[in-house]
Image (cartoon, rainbow, N blue to C red; front, side, top):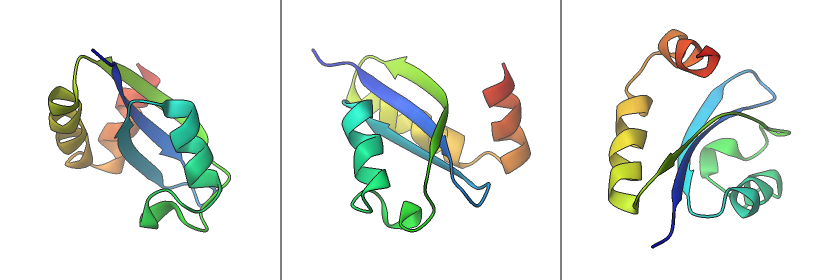
Length: 81
């Protein structure tokens, strides 16, 4: 069983990007190289400001969906916890 990570990146333009992966180091490297999500292209460098470990892809996807519905202010409160 692989562990999945939900992560929030702070982009160079101060925006926040939420994603999931089973290899955080590689995924952030992909974002930095411009081959990650379309949203992150040209917005680097990135800082990982939040991460959560989840059991499987399904629970990671559900958590990602819930966090993506939050406002930026609510996400910032989550990051500060």
